[in-house]
Image 1 (tube, rainbow, N blue to C red):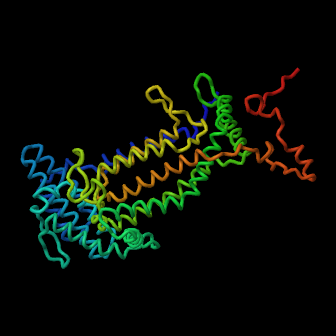
Image 2 (image 1 turned 45 degrees about the vertical axis):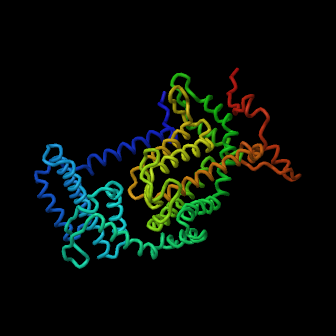
Image 3 (image 1 turned 180 degrees about the vertical axis):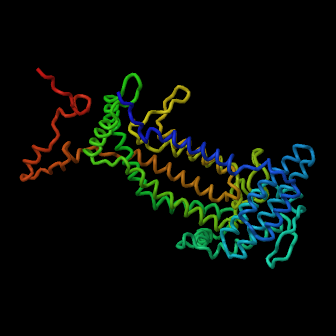
Amino acid sequence: MARPQARPQGNFLQIALITILLMISYQMLCVSNKPNDPRTRIQVQAELEQQNANLLDLKIVETERLLIAKIDEEFKAGKLTQVQADEARLASVLTVAATQFQSGVAWNHYAKIDRSYTTLAAQYERFRRTPMWKNVDVTVRGRDGAPVAVTAESLYTEITTELSARNKKEIVWGVLPGWQLIDVLVKATGSIPSFSYAFAAFLLALVVRGIIWPLAHKQYQWGRQMAQLSPRIKEIQDKYKDKKTGQVKDPQAFQMETMAIYKQYGINPMAGCMPALIQMPLFLAVYQCMWKYKFEFTKGSFLWVHPGADKFLGIPVGANLGEPDFILIFLYGVSMVVTTLLQPVTDSGQTPPIRIAGKEIPQQRFIGLLIAVVFSVTMFFWPGLPSAFVLYWIFTNILSTVQSLIEYRLPLAELVPVQSVKGGALPGGSPDDEKDKKQNDVSSDFFGSKGNPNNRKRRKK
């Protein structure tokens, strides 16, 4: 007997895991440091400085990785102390950030300048409270091409000042005045540092959620309709399932019979994907708008996130809403998990569940939870991520949860067939259509006692 074909939906998790492994392998093999390079740290550093003089902002990134590897080698060999190694690493990052910044200014390239901020932002979060932030300096190429000495503090100030001025003029996707949109929401409540900036994130979440509310309503209704068909689909699956292997014996017949059920009730199994696809551009647009406003968010605070805060419950916190905050990221992860658990499961039993600790979890829900956890963990390592954006997404998840609770309390009409088994539309009772009704209507015994199509072959006498 031919081996059953694997279903794409059933293999989605495996494909996702393979993709993640390939990405990790790429990082390890293609973006890793080069420990076998015969040059010394001083020689690699000289190449880094030469690339800075020529504003080679792409090549210098690879050279910096090699230089960091050389610094690590000397530190492990005892040639450098911890402080000396940290100073050398910070100096190399300063050289790269200065190269990206000056290249962006020379070419009037916003993305290069923004990349220089991202490069330096991770070091800012690590060293801003240490003497190294003010004392470690490097000589780099200046705006006029002449060498100039910069510290991490002076370069960070220069980059943020330049970006602040440019952000007010940048247009998101050539359509949205991102900075101005957020500024209107902040000024609507008086630009109060302890209230307006956080409340602007809530207002933005309210506006965006209001836009997608009708689409989300359709998605929830569709999910509940799919749930109504779940017993019928499960019976079809059991009908074609091999008792020994647990696999579907005839995938083609199974899919055809399943699609016939969907068609009969006028349900598109892919309709639930549309709201999610529409939300993604909104997510990216909102992030770009808030990213343009990130330096203004440094004026705002929220509960434990304020300039005088250092730690909250022993956890480092952001000084303002323009900087990352680990507690907010953790709360975001919790809100993502709750929102995912309240989403309707719409795989209708067609994909095998995931068994964890003796419990079966629908594959669709497991993937949703996996994405929520992975994305939340990624945020912890996102350099320069404004807390205001995390706060916005928490508000969005809260509003999504509220809608979920409302939707599940709304009455749902019973599913009514809209097509006959033969594919024709069911007649609406017109006298002229009586003949069609007799020809196209579904017979009472078509689905049998369990709702399955009665396809048993007659035995030959």
